[in-house]
Image (cartoon, rainbow, N blue to C red):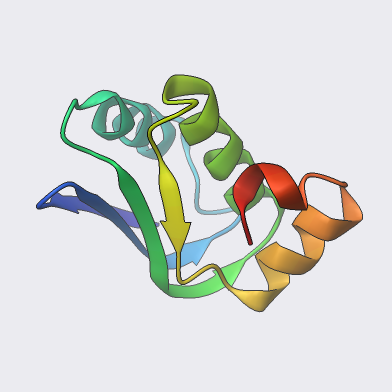
Length: 92
């Protein structure tokens, strides 16, 4: 998993799975989400995703409940959000 913040957007790319979201990656993601200027998560660069990616979206919502939007959410993550009945929370 890769994450990079530019112009208020936090870009996630690569594989965002249980195997790739190590504690260091997660801690960095949390730190990036906390940045005042971050208002959007862009997942268009994600090549593979599972429930770990859903967890990151929920983390972003927990840290910025009214100030974060999502774009480029992979179909697999949208399907999981629907399955977990949180589709409305992550706006996918």
